Image (cartoon, rainbow, N blue to C red; front, side):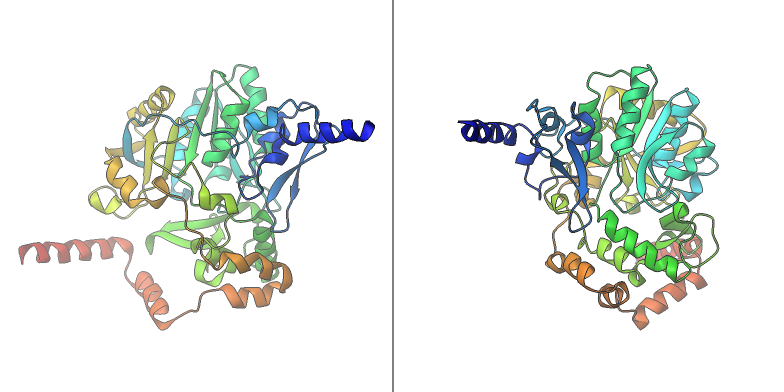
Length: 412
């Protein structure tokens, strides 16, 4: 009798908590752990280094709150698209942003109104976590692309707490994280969400190994200042690892195994390859990301990085309107349909390459130096010449020469 009751209880709880979600579908957002009323869910590191939930079935009460907050189990709630612009921040400090400084500009606007920002930054160990930003000077930590999955659990808790205190909060994250925070804070006035046009996320444990390896070679110190992209006289966008404001070693993505595999989409979380959020309809109030159609706007900051910004809700429209009305930004209206056609992550998830089958197996069985030797890209003469040309001819000169060549071609 007792055995039968135990089996009945196990079947009941199995379909009422996140244990029924396939591991390959889990996004690792962590909302299930935060929402659990009896704290029976823990996020543990799987064999590839990603966070995944585990449920203590003996303590689960079958309330299903974890499933209702789950980005993999619940269907996304998309918003209608509003105004789209090509954006460049003119604010001081925006130059270390990866694209056009859109997230930085929106965050500044929210803080100036007395609100707070919850976004990803690296801690002193190089771990990507969502945390609170209360001052404009502090926003430096959130700037720059971080191509690794952030632990957003504390960020969700901060949002819940501050919204209960009637504060305005801007949450910036991947679409699955934005979907999670919206489910954790339903019907909360004051929450503004900004989802990123996301390619997918590699494993935090993989990043930790790579960072440890680079540190052992004397690079990427301090860890909290690491950035994956720069913009300078060489190019509008340099895909390289370095530290913010540092004049030290810059590591091209081809020479770093973590970065090289990310660019090839070969180290992403399995759920990223079937991401339901990679489409034109978005989950956030505002969507920001790199602009794939920027060549169609040749006169808009031709030597600088720019951002695509899309307002999806009335709250997003209001924030965007306020930011654009100030003197700290420049913008032009964007043809979103063209952008969606050219920007892969606005119409489909990243494609899973066959190489993905072996990356994490090799990572766990090889020493990191031999792993790096296997997966770093080969440096060719063509690659060296291209880098030399960028050093020799600044981006503004290359833009000028390209325009001259285009003009001669049109005359012909």
